[in-house]
Image (cartoon, rainbow, N blue to C red):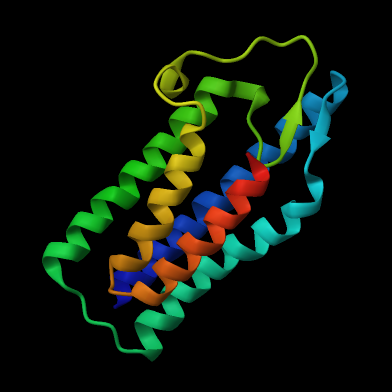
Length: 158
């Protein structure tokens, strides 16, 4: 269970790094006349993503979820793949990437990197992580709850 806690904490640290990048990029976008859409749902998104991390640890510990190697290692690989996809999105968008929906007038649509395959690859990474990270240690309630709530949030966000 210690290594699972370390994994969840590593994902939390990664999320903090994202927030630092997002803050810098938000300033860049706003300085170029960017406008934010849908800011009302942003606090709910922050709560949901924080609850994902807390739920992973709480459910795995309190419900004494077992580590099932076939599922756990597969989901660990998916979790790592989701992080790689997310950072591919971040590097592809450069200063245009942030955790909010900010549109800078006059900038063309990005069609390189993962955006040549998917319109919203970062959301795919979030969805994959939301399923995989809890399932690394059998936290299926957290995986289901996050997936349902995230789908509702994405319906508003997209």
